[in-house]
Image 1 (cartoon, rainbow, N blue to C red):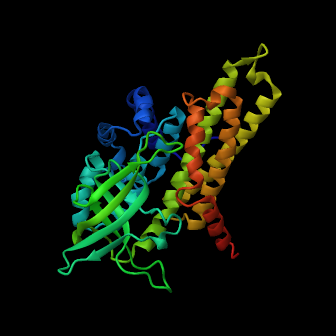
Image 2 (cartoon, helix red, strand yellow):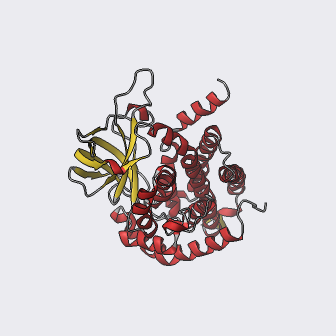
Image 3 (cartoon, one colour):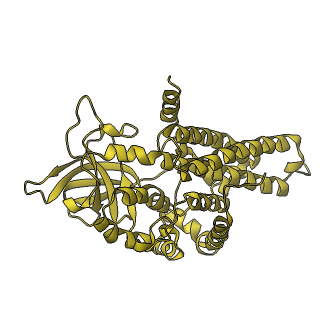
Length: 385
């Protein structure tokens, strides 16, 4: 069926991104996987291409687009080639919305030009060793100094994508103790300079998948953060985090759909080339039926994502809508990619094949951005259950 979610501008951008991936990513990607991160120079290349500035207003060096559909194009093209842009999706899809909505004019002029160029990379630090889905349980604290000029930040964060290379990190922390009747109060966001004294990057974590993206532990020991680096209002950050979650979860859903689409493409090509008992693997009825099932699942995922994309651009995507999209696509992707790997036989288990990397990469989509169990709770609550 013809897709209507993208226009000519999106398709022209798709061609640009596809060419960029073929020339600037594919030849180097194996090395990036081995080293566990993409080079900083690559982020500057993305900046020069305009990727980081798509949704940034023109006065700060961006293109001033309001649509999230350009991000969807990037997800689809990366999955199609079996690659990723490292931690850049966190930079643009997670961090940017906070800077645009809650940053004041001075902060935007300080940070956004470097954000657009790739000179200033960002990450967001929410998860702690003892607080994942329960953000209200975070223990990292920031106390205002006696003279009111800075906060003193202490604590630790983990699973921070892009954390090893970030120049500024949006650190979620407690600026006041939780109220037993409102555990969500008292949380703030500080945009912390990674070069600050007392700020340290711990282990770069060895993950099952997403091998080209650095994921780190961070710790803060009496880090002085100027009050000018408080994002938005003190104590109001839980509401900020909730406001941005629908877009974050849609981004994950888009990735799961794109990975599934790519998996079917890889499996289709493989079974047409591979022979067993003197016959193409594609000629067996089981192969045809498995791929037919996968194709139907991917078509359904695409429809869900396209509808959600339109809703997001229209300002109508609810928390329950996003949770439903994420739950459906990530759970379905697990089945689709597993079936496509099975069609590869033993070669599907080899990490040199893109299908094996997709299999590992997609597993986390049911965990980060809120687990599938949390998504079910959100959907059930929206149903009055």
